[in-house]
Image (cartoon, rainbow, N blue to C red; front, top):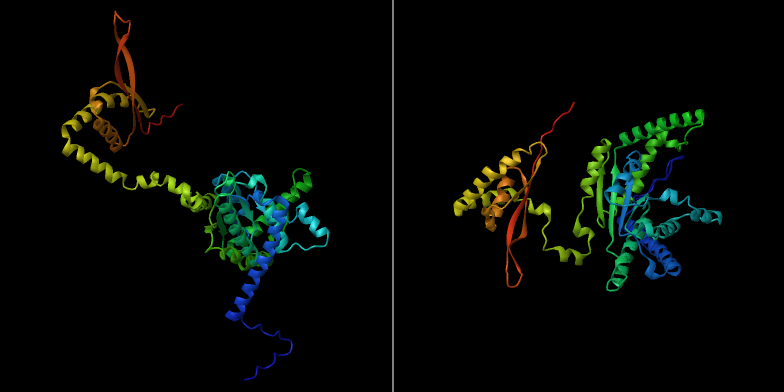
Length: 412
């Protein structure tokens, strides 16, 4: 069957790629990435030395639709992760003196140059604990180079694991974070920013006070704003999503107000020790329970203990309850405003270890937080005439702190 020629003036349709041709393209991209990365890595080893290739413990790849609020939320993400360094913004990096030298010598800043500039920046000491990358990766080749970098980091960790330098090659953690808004919201926010920037810059030019903000053509034209959003979805978002199966992927709904988005970020970046700690450290700590696991059945366990006190050791339980009701609560009532009562007692009812457990459980059941500490004091009783030695007896003082929600008093 013959295929008719295209009509005059028509553009020939591009045949849909077969699975075989798509695989060939992917293979070529992977090979290109390997060649690029190997060349960059050899230069790094030559310039810095293998033992000095110390990359960040944590890498956060931050992507976001136009108007999603990357600039707004980057500081919050930095704070949540306890980082002190400024984010590495790829667009700013490509305007750096290093990038300008490449351009001045007639070189294009392609994938190899981007990867080289980025890796050299990440070797700076201020990024040792972690770095946020804004705008990387954006191409399939850059995606593959990122995977190769993480593989190298694991190899370096293994190489130096049993050496004094092991602390410099910790287990890497990579997070993919995408702040997402739909097309309508993105366009509205871009155009709103354009109006605000225009008003600000007009005021700066009129008064000569302040600094001019960057004006983007996409913030003033609805068609360009829409195109910018679609380019993000077709390129950057796809590049980041392709890493979903390899690294920790966080899809952040950024449609709502700032505080709501921050709560979404907090939930996504909640600390998980098994993801961030060295496996040997995780094993070392395994015998110590996590607080969140302890409290899961805390109420049921408390009920079970209190009922067992009553049914199995009722006499002692009655003594402890009476002691609390008659001697402790009257003091607590006097501190109802402050919400904290400090009490010292020598009452012998607390000499029984089980009574101490009962004491704490009773207050917990009633909604108080009780802390009990035993303080031993040596009290002189007599002096032996023959030796001059002072004989002492040990006095036990139980120091109790009871905390609860105090009363709020309005003044004036």
